Amino acid sequence: MTAHVLAGALADDGRRRIFAAIVLGATSATEVAERTGLPVRVALSGVRRLTDAGLVTGADGTLAADEASLRATARDSRPADDAEPGVDPVLRTFLRTPGVLVGLPAQRGRRRVLLAHIAEQSFEPGTRYPERAVDDALKPWCAAGGSDHATLRRYLIDEQLLIREHGIYQRP
Image 1 (cartoon, rainbow, N blue to C red):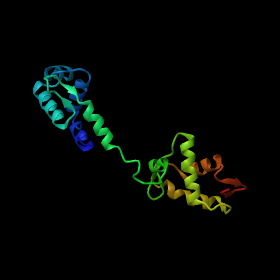
Image 2: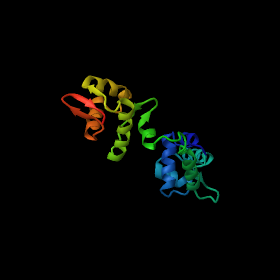
Image 3: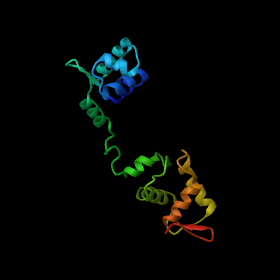
Image 4: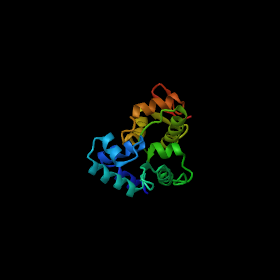
């Protein structure tokens, strides 16, 4: 089963209800129909579709969720960790290529990794920047709406990745 097949099988509200009833203990189409409030004919059709997709087993006449198949699908659908060798997982998660921020991590350590990357890519060490230049450098990172340039600027200062003195910014 692929993630696409899984999504297709559970795309219908009735089939989701049927699957939920089976996961919660319904072992026959009649029980599924009773628990979901669906007609038996609809329940049978849904069970057949879920069985064909590999979500439900019923070989011995008793319906059950096919947990092994679900685990295998989850394992096989996971993106490879080596999809982009050398790229930090935090950057892979929170940046869209090329250099567009899709969100800020809630955890301080992860946020610092992301902010350090932004500082390294946007500012030369020792160069002095007026606030307008800092804002102009940070705005492209915010194109996807993951944050705003003022928030980035504040975090960069809070993490001491940029130093501000009399309205002039500098990367240490």
